[in-house]
Length: 310
Image (cartoon, rainbow, N blue to C red; front, side, top):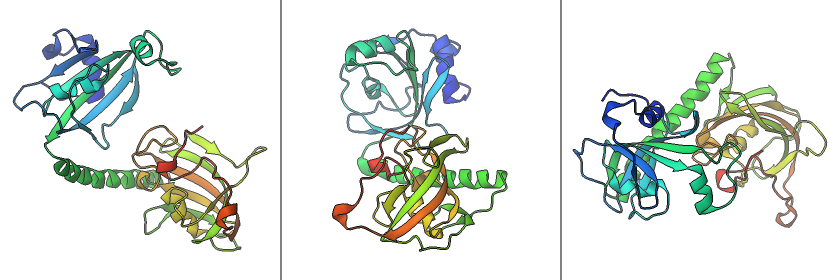
């Protein structure tokens, strides 16, 4: 079969445009629709083994998520249970297989209750296309491969940030940890450093789109964001990059995803998001006693503490 992009493969399967996929969709025990394209040269994945896959999720003509061009996903195979989920299909897959799963929105709502997201209509079909890149028999083998992929992902993130800076003729200094910092004004007050409480005004944007996702720069009730440096209360890119400033300093941080939310969904609701922050250091003081430390606002916290974004 001619090699095509995974997101295009979804549409071709659904319209029957690929000759080798003309068979009807099959159904799992729960009623989930699926198609598997396989040369059957490799053994079927066993329970406990790990699938390494790229996948694309779509509704109508909109891509909700795609792992193409980024980190693959690792999924442990379990016994097929009638749960109306792609997990029912995983025990049927082999290395090299392609598959499409179709979930009906009204069935999802009936089975699991609650309201559908506003961008999904009751009569919609959600499609998920999988490409099985490899199958690993043990956790150790899966972990070793995942670590190699993470090195590649880090390199992709750095290249993306550096490419953005070059394209926009932005000269930034790179810290030892990997945050890119533009210092418009260093400030002339106390230095941002470990153990200091810092008050920051900021505007956060996605990179490379530049779409703003949150700001406390203007408007009533937008108080400066306060945190103590060096205590793991914030994303690493902030803890790292803000040390280039003193009280009164202004500038911009360009943060690769591994120093932001990494594989956790970020403010753009996707993993591995590179971010931009315009910042202003309002104040730098000694940290308060632990009992009087103020409650943390929702942004920009470290990944394991992340809350839904505006």
